[in-house]
Amino acid sequence: MIAGGGIVGLVMALAIEKHTGLQAEIYEQAHSYDDEVGAGMGMYANGLRVIRDISPDLLEELQANGYPYQYRRWERHDGTLVTECDERALGEKETETIHGVSCELQTLGIRRWKLQQALHKAVAKAGVSVYFNKKVETVKTPENGMTEVVFTDGSSRQTQLLIAADGGRSAIRTCQLQKMFNSNDPAAEKKEDEQMPKLDYTGVTCIMGVAENIASRRGITFPVANTTQCHGAFYPTAPTEQCFQFHFPVPAKKNDETGSCTQDSCWGNLSQKVSRDECGKLAEILEADGWDEEKFLRPLRNVTNAVRVGFCKLSPSLEKWSFPNAHGRPGTILVGDAAHPPVPYIGQGAQQGIEDAGTLALLLKKFCLDDQGNLDLQNLDYAVTVYESIRIPRVREILDNCHSWGNMQLKRAQNAAYNIVKEE
Image (cartoon, rainbow, N blue to C red):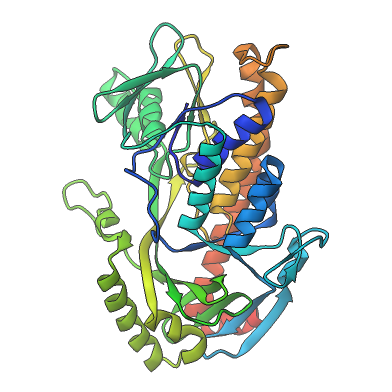
């Protein structure tokens, strides 16, 4: 079973069905997949390659629902160009034309809800069951060697293999780590609790949104402002739709009693009215600081949906992405944000989760199917070892690059001399 029916959970189910012929069950805490929720995201060649391996038809549908980038530009907040490159260099051999741009695995911007809806439709077509309103409460490891997931509605489900795709604030990861670090010795328990990986707010909050009826620029742009001391990203998700992101350093609000970050209540989807109010106020501030009206302010003034999110990283990062059952074999495997919460400065958050799903499915095919095509977990230990040896170093390097990129952009916005050097 797969806990979490977001993008990675849906791709995981499709990859398992495609590569092994097996069907997973998906348990999702949301009540449904709704239209017009969230902002946009980029799909890059590495993620699109996994989709293509599952279904070329699904790839074509995603391309039809998104909009390709032609270029990548770094600009100043007043709209002047620093430098640009051809985004199509990241794709593969040109084979077909989508929205006038010919490239098979061309980077594209897409609304997150459109991507999720397309994946859900493909999952339904494959006969995979998705159960909504299933929020995970805890995970148990009964003596029969199964893994049991207990939901907040009181129901539960046992499975031979639990794949946790329940996001950056994964309840399954938290539950399993608490078991691992639990001790009967109070002194040891306190020390172990300090060492247990926890989400750590990076100090950067992003407001991102989508504006309709805006003639899309044909690529992704990264503006930086010394005046406002922030940086951003703008990219198309449709011919007349633009997604924007603004990254601001915002100190964490601390709970006086526990010292923990209480900023969570400030993050999430914003109502249409709040989106317009907040983005309108931000546009006024940026206008006074000299931001280009046509390129950067019009999308803010025409916002339809906005989201506020604080970037968090898992500190320390996980050394293993699997947890044993009562028989000592892997019973739970983490994928996507549950294993590696991202800081999405370079558009690789979802892409790395999609890579996890494609890799794990291929390893299950290679090592965990018997001659009749039935699930045989005798070699699961080895499959998981290979999965972790492939994925952990790659994801760690990419997340380090994400942090370095974000820190560089923030420093450019805060230090004029440093910015001049980096522009050069």
